[in-house]
Image 1: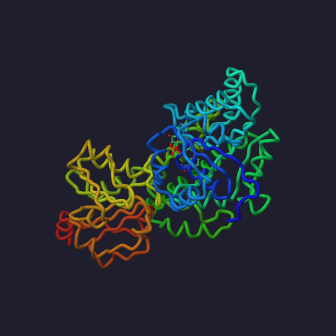
Image 2: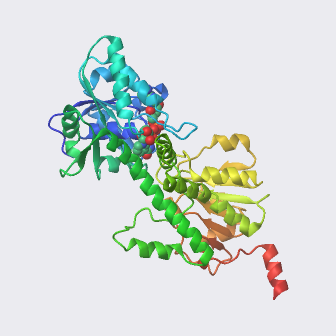
Image 3: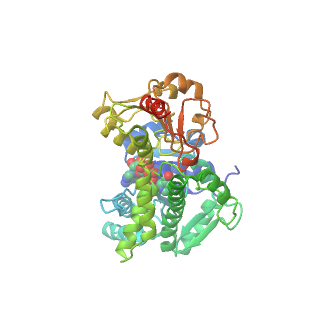
Length: 465
Ligand SMILES: NC(=O)c1ccc[n+]([C@@H]2O[C@H](COP(=O)([O-])OP(=O)(O)OC[C@H]3O[C@@H](n4cnc5c(N)ncnc54)[C@H](O)[C@@H]3O)[C@@H](O)[C@H]2O)c1
């Protein structure tokens, strides 16, 4: 990539998925970037060249930028604030009990910036924040500047991040759109110049008001989540009426007005963004005396969908007490080790509560202390997917990692005790299980299913015939 002609000094607060990718991405196009985090252990690891979470291509990008002296890490706010003409806030905004976003980390950074600022800077809110937060940040910085008696000028802009985990580096380096929400001309000019190498055409960078910018991030996530819940509802109906949701998906995707993305039925969405952002948007509605019924339904459908795999197993076995359950995939989606709000966690919790034992495998998640410590004899993570199915009564596919795509059906048959495969992502929808004892259940595919063959059902069949 061509380096920028006029590199800027940028400081990024937060070395998480958004902060670290943004810091490395901006350094990769030539800016001088300092990335600061309050987590000293995280910063120490980064200084040693270790990226604290898995994101394809990120480790290489960080190494490259550090090597060229364009990226460094610190725990010192003073260091970061003195360095940056752009000060980017990419810290967490987790949900409070009522679902609204907890802004304490963002406000904390704003106050620190105001207290230590000694030159003009554009303060950029990259975290996902409710409408009106840019004004709150402006006020927090202004109050702190006044308290410090420095009278320094600054501008605030909203610049939500649209990257998705598992594809974050590519999303940042080749964005569909970059949204800048700012009414201050200086902020618009500086951010337009900063992002110029990432905008091959003039329509990539979109300038809107701060409030529109803040809302468009929530609206985008809510739209994607709505498509998923919509298809899960259609899958439920397909199961009930004997249709196949894979066919329905194919037909719908052929309509360019609908498009093919985010049309897969499955075990529900998770992750650190959709569930939290949907709750935050509902809370914003409540604050404005509005009942956002559609978005509430999206959450409701998703909550119910998290139980669909267990319900299917219950329908087959009656009780899961004593059953040995293999789970493939723990992260909330492939190509990440992030387990925040992952559907697999809900499934494990419910299986253990039903008296089943769980043997899980994930290509990246190798440790789930919350289950290993409370149910040490009933929960185990193994490092090979086929080790998980040894003596298993059922295999649940929860995360559609590409390494699970080529299923060794013979190996399942050789190793499983009973032969139920529940595919929570319809990953194996085109595999043929008909010549095997396996009962294969997808999502929304009851027309393709046959009842599981258990010792009891075989006896029953003999009696009936
Ligand atoms: N993860 C995603 O895919 C994604 C995508 C788009 C937007 N977002 C939004 O971006 C924000 C950050 O998300 P994330 O997933 O990167 O979070 P994260 O939890 O991975 O990282 C946040 C980091 O901020 C650090 N931090 C907290 N207070 C700080 C302070 N005062 N100074 C410096 N660092 C501080 C934390 O130690 C942590 O390392 C959230 O608002 C999120 O909704 C996330």
